[in-house]
Length: 320
Image (tube, rainbow, N blue to C red; front, side):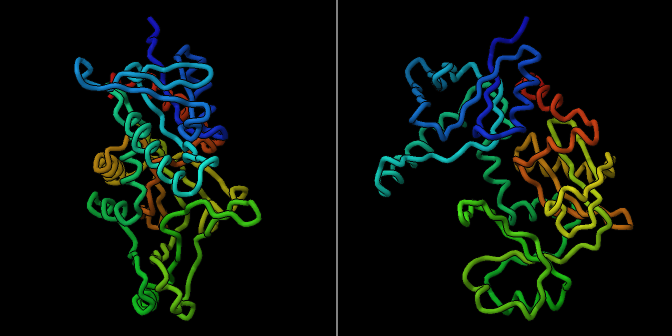
């Protein structure tokens, strides 16, 4: 008998990766409800009750096409919802309303009973801190390149002199628009003579550049591991996807063991890991994105990633 409980997918309207997973689930006959928490309160409403004879949250989330009972959600795929917006309010009232929405609607959505989160929003938030990720990676047994996070120009200068060549990369990448177009901060090599007092303005991340022959993206979905070698010849392979050659590979046993230790540390069931691969065969940890992209790797490799994620969501907590 088909499980009537829906899979909830929380993401923005323009999310091709979520589209693939939803299509796979629907082809299997699994009920799916998709909504963007950023649509609250314009086209999304929520009402929830706890206490008395309600030991867990009871209520529903309603969008124009569907009402979803909170206690009926078997799994929640938390992707990339847009932020709360209240354009009809003044700045102070909008901030107040957004806080109520975040801790009210958001608080209900992270407290669903018997629900598998891929991933839980709180666990995503924890894992998105690069310093925490690097500390966990080191503790779990990964090789981690020397890394400095600082706003002290003298310390940055000394680090580059000692560990050069060194790269600079952003610690976080919020939305930054120029002429209406989203901008990115590329990973770049930095020299000691480029360091000046502007470093003092905020925190910066400097890291010893790894002498690599290729990169590896490892995507973990539940207990399944998909590792793909990326040959690009670039310092940052994200700069030009047209240069890529993809090859499925098998991680070394110690790397795979560390991967699952890292996921357990943060309470994640999904993770997109990036490694630098040396000529010696050593894998160096770069980062893990708890909401990373993966779908572009499936067509050139034939790896069954969409089906695997759909399996995870369809099984819910019964598959863990």
